[in-house]
Amino acid sequence: MFASPSTRTLARELGVDISAVDGSGPGGRVTGADVRAASRNGTVARMADDAAGAEQSAEAASGDLADPSRTEDSAAVVASTSTAAATDAAVRDRTLAMPATRRLADELGVDLDAVPASEKREGEPYVTPEDVQAYAEGGATAAPTSAATGDAAQAASASEAAAGAAGTASDAGEETSATGDAGSVPGDRVPYRGVRRTIGEQMAESKYTAPHVSHHDEFDASALVELREDLAAAAEADGVKLTYLPFVVKALTTALQEFPYLNASLDEENEEIVLHDEYNIGIAVATDAGLMVPVVDDADEKGLKRLATEIRDIAGRARDRKIKPEEMQGGTFTITNIGVIGGEFSSPIINYPEAAIFAMGPIKKRPWVVDDEVVARETMRFSMSVDHRLVDGADAARFSNRVKELLAEPTRLLLE
Image (cartoon, rainbow, N blue to C red; front, side, top):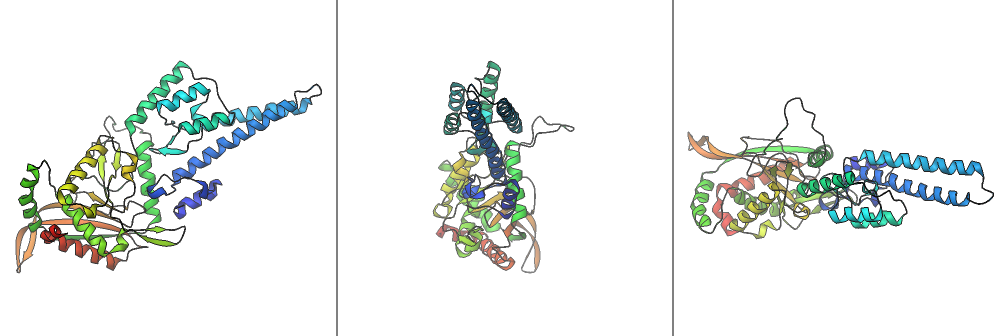
């Protein structure tokens, strides 16, 4: 079980056994949202136990010599349980579930909002058929839903289908800019939930758990520009749009193999640094719902055309909200592209629990010194943040220098 110190502190405050919590974060990491959900679910479970106990008390009191005081006590327990159930249902903004799960809940007479959720999607409780069945077998049921409730369930189901999968966060998009909060105007109060809340919680956990150190640099990208132009036509003939991003991915995966601590994560539970032997690169993509980070698995084993094709595919499906949750898990290093939005440098937030994140800046003509003369050259600026618990500043600088070498003389990448 993998969780940050702040998450463990929250678990202690809420009285949650963190070892029993299923993590929804990258690599099964337990997040603050998981702990809060477990706390709420634990309350529901206790209510079910109280209701069962109240039922047993009522049965015992139903004999010819029933004690009136015991009957009153049982009624009080039931009333208390009903109040607690209503309070718990009010806590949830919504409950996500597939239509089949909702039908099962209706058939069993179960209030879906009262069912403890075993998963979370978009930061919201996600109830499975197994959750409904287990809750029904526990004896806690509600009256069948009304037509109005059924309409609400269908609307929630439609929202779930549109929501797709929640993403983790970094500081900018891939090769597109976010569409913004369409429909929102100054003066509005926009609910902080769903994907936006998931992103916010992930970023806050990362920023306040991993001590960030940022590194900024620049290099002469003239050779990279020329090589991409030479290869772009051939790639386009094969139906592939070749951008600079695949070159950057190749350079990073090459350098990561030489600097393994940047392709690592910290297992705080076992007090071990995990040096990953896979190079799964997350690509930050701006969507209308927030930032998502689909992952290119085994990026070190793929050529430029295949990288370009896969990146375009996952980025497009992320923007269309068709990306699968498992396609945004297992990343070991993340790239974000601020250049498409117009930025030069940034201090990106690490996609925790990864050790580092690389932010591409724009390639454009800038003053550059060549043979003691200032000339206009195509240069690229970039930024990088590292978890200082795992990576020293000197190693971050050496890694940066290696990436610059590979991109400044990109023909070397063709040999990789």
